[in-house]
Length: 456
Image (cartoon, rainbow, N blue to C red; front, side, top):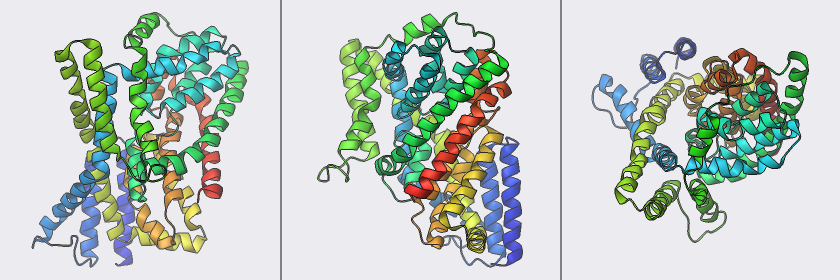
């Protein structure tokens, strides 16, 4: 591959990043970027794009996208589809809402305002095992714990900042990006969760909770507490969350419990895959819901939320993974991966240094766009090639990149969760970011240190 073609590929990479930051439709940006990159690779002397050519190079370009898409649907794409469908069904029957209201109930026993801030952050983050939408989780916490935080004496701004930043890590098997990360480094989602995400998450989340206490205390003293949010209607919304029976709170965690038991690390003779566990728990929840409601027609209608959710995830996430993998293949074909490897070796970075650099790139894009999904999915697919070139398994590198995409979202004034919570708290999103930035950066640094020294 000629040097000229490789540097033209770098130019395409920068233009693609600019278009994503400017909020052009991400799927088309990555598709067109991948198309240009692969054309450049052919111009540069690449013999073939696919193992079995169609006989016409123009068709081969689309055949490559088809081959990648088929592979993704059969693997990680299907896991993400099922996870999204199960989450939609849990929301439809009220199980997700009940899970949040039950889990946050113990917080009412805490009376110190800044201790409760730390506890809310930790509790809220634990809820992300089940609730994978940052905005959705934040609004559930607004309904369930925001009034409690205000009642014990916390400032509305401090409460809003904590609520807006609770989803700092997206866990497998519920998170689509976590499932993608696990697939690319050849791990089962539950193994990625237990062996890598949890050991990293515990010190990271505790450090962020402590940082929130000091940061919110400092800004409360410096800037005041801000205007109280409008609490009218909160009580009615809270009652709506409690409509489902309390035991429905068990439904969202059933797949995780089954996967923690029936896997090759624990119960080696009987193992469950993520899709099997999700389908099984969906059916169990459907049967129980039908018995509780005593209205079979309604239960049948609600059960369809599983498939509607799968359709929604196909358009929002799985389709993005198709074009992101196509784009990443183009990066590899024009020699950008080799350029990264040679640069890392010349600078003496190694796998840890490369992980830090790539995670920082993803973090910057996340802050600029308000979402790290596009940045992560487009760069995650190059990790296997980079890891192979560096002679490592790539897990630590992937963990750094994946966590950066989730954790630094709360530093972005254009992130959906920041805009929503800032609107509720009657403040400018930039005011909110001023209170979330330091805890997020503290968590990011701790995550990098733990991953580099203990998990690499």
